[in-house]
Length: 307
Image 1: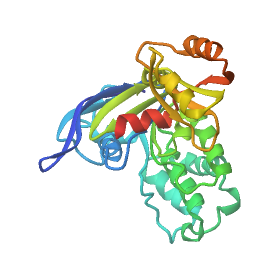
Image 2: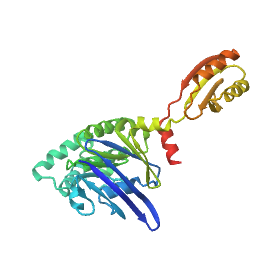
Image 3: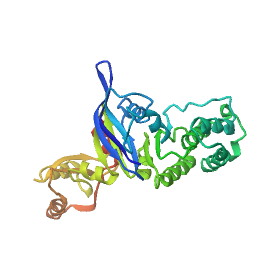
Image 4: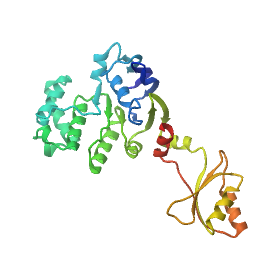
């Protein structure tokens, strides 16, 4: 089921938390939604799930508008909010039964769905406990289970791995990738490596606007506008630095902290410096011990776009 967001805006007084954003998520796509705190991620998710009405614009799920058919839209969505709302005095099984009933799961299928969710989310050893007795990680699993109990076509997960240990994160990551084969998934996270490993596509929002849209590889390539090299040259540091800066293709040179003889060399836009550095070392009889390209990380892309 596709999600189409068109010119979506949310205002609080004069402030625009979400500012005229548009994008589409296709069936079977897992999209990571990134942005600093206050960028508009959670607000956007709340509008998609009909938790909050937009000030203008629209969201359509398979042609159904959140403005015209909010009740129909809600039936097709599983939602895990950023702050996982749970009834702490309820046992896990009873809570999932309650969630299934309010989501309209057929009575004859409720017990089966509860069993599937307990197994899928790794809750078997804890299933007889009250939610208030669980660790934060297991409470998060219960939240994910309630989001999926009615087998929705769309999953909106706001920080789904908050509070999970590394092993649990890997398990939930596998689960999300598996679900993404047949469902439309949007998830937000501050763990960039998790998004990179889980998502087919990444959207970055900053100050209410979409500032990047593409796969992690595409975003890195777009950000890698200038060649950055790490070189290790034996010799007198200042002479080497001066020599590197005199090269016509080089824009910036910095000494790598804690690594003697290592320099980071940034080339000018659309220029390459590898051959020039090699030729300079030969000419000056310096020993070039190492020269490697520095790949732009997703963290670098995120920082550049949101600072």
